Amino acid sequence: MQNVNEVKRFAVEIRKETIKCIGKLGVGHIGGALSIVDLLAVLYSGEMNIDPADPKKDDRDMLVVSKGHSGPAVYATLALKGYFPIEMLETLNQPHTNLPSHCDMNRTPGIDMTTGSLGQGSSSAMGIACANRLKGYDNYTYLILGDGEIEEGQVWEAAIFANAKKLTKVIAFVDYNKCQIDDYVQDLCALGDIAKKFESFGWYAQNVEDGNDVEQIAAAIANAKAQNERPSVIVLNTVKGKGYSKIEGTLGSHNMPVDSSMVEEALAELDKQAQEIGE
Ligand SMILES: Cc1ncc(C[n+]2csc(CCOP(=O)(O)OP(=O)(O)O)c2C)c(N)n1
Ligand SMILES: [Mg+2]
Image 1 (spheres, rainbow, N blue to C red):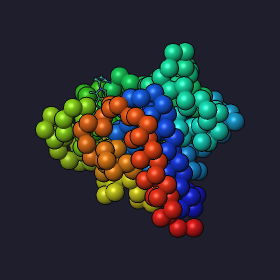
Image 2 (image 1 turned 90 degrees about the horizontal axis):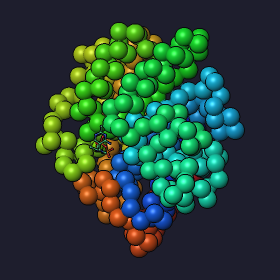
Image 3 (image 1 turned 180 degrees about the vertical axis):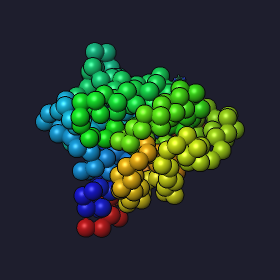
Image 4 (image 1 turned 90 degrees about the vertical axis):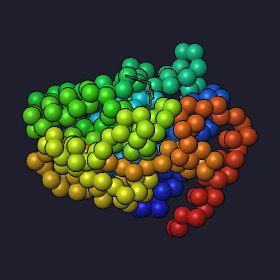
């Protein structure tokens, strides 16, 4: 990973662009987008073997954002990395856009898999990992799952498959922000110990206490890469809506109206956060 403070500043920039483009549209999945920003900042700060000038590079590391409603945060990250002009973010989810609300590999440079139907990205990621191994590549396949999403049975079918086929180059993340679409995960369908569940499916599992801390995320990825016998999962304890205090941890942040006064308020808060990051 690059310099820690640079990665933190990158995360602030991603949050600002995410909020701006959702604000321009007026509504969006802001909560689940903001909770994975620190993970995206780490992945796109040298962790992934990728080239923005050659988005389809055959042996690149690949990312499946299975919680596809977080598209705006992924688009903000890709734009800041130079995959496409930053102005394109203003077209988010408008007619004929290349940035639909949910990730679409046929429209957006840098998106490796179309997602949005929760659960399916887990199977896609395992297929990608198998295909890359068949091609003789030793690249990684990263997968980002929501905590509500892992209530889908398909996720566990894919987990069985990954263990059976020894897909050791898979690193999955669970964005454990405790919130689903309209209720807390605990109340809707309690998950128990997520890491232990994956472990019992043959995975190498880690819990990250603060899943919005770039250093803790990077350390867990390093541990995952240091073992090469099992697929890996990293459970990130995150906060839905992280970075904009008014909506942090709220169920209402799942898919909400965002007006220009909220954008202003959030950007001011994020500028302050950026100032507090050291050199
Ligand atoms: C198969 C499927 N069922 C339902 C939905 C509708 N849906 C969209 S987001 C969401 C909640 C997901 O919760 P979680 O995975 O915790 O996401 P996050 O907290 O990151 O927003 C639901 C049920 C969907 N997209 N796909
Ligand atoms: Mg959630």
